Image 1 (cartoon, helix red, strand yellow):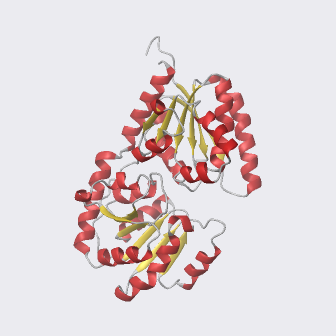
Image 2: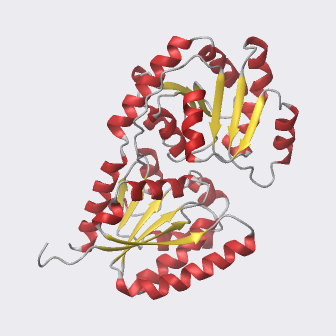
Image 3: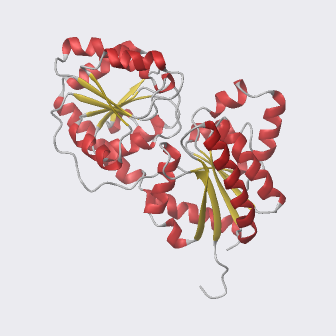
Length: 357
């Protein structure tokens, strides 16, 4: 538009090839054409690999960032807890010194545990100061808004739920007794409870199979060994590509996520959008995604409870019509509430608000 300055946004976060939810969010923004509506430069601050490789990437990212920053009006920071927070803090503080407008987009499901349990009082003070340098602070759910209002000026906090590209192919077959998990493989994702439930379920559902799609995190050797011991029932294909994921959504009839804490998991949104019946922990933004009980999109589970997990999965595995109804309801809910195109529209409005466009 004539006389209107170009909207220039510098966005930082994990490499778009990284196995994880934040990179999936960013890739969905690109798929929805965010880079066609604004001048967008993306800098990867983290990559998969060794600690040395991650350190080198962080240093290279900061150098790239310093050269790029003067040419951009807004810094959009995709951030989680722990190392991600410390890493992004350097970028936030630098952008603030350059008087850039900052949006912090918080994705990490365990920020509360990180902030109150794993940070010293001095670290909390420094983190709080950096977070309040944002003009806009985006969170994934109302429950997170309530928590972050203890740290960040409440007027800055806005809820922006994750969005996904809605698949055109609808699920038709719900006869399978295969249950699918996708995500990081570690105790915090409820893998221990899930493996504990396997023998109980198998006694009642003879052809039951559990597929664990993902990459094992360090420090979970006991769970890895237990998975190997259950190899006749528990299948481990490793990290799942997009094409493989779409095939598994059609092949399996239930998606399970017995996580201990969570933000707003992209894997859950994608499974529901594909028409899968879901069983997931009632933590973080998950209840908001699944809606009211009357919406009938799936089963909410208490975290860290293998008995309830096995009982609910057995009920679902014995009732194909229930799986079908829940899967169809889940797809409708995601189509109506979590289309990434609406997220992109909202982001552009936030950019306009703080960038004086």
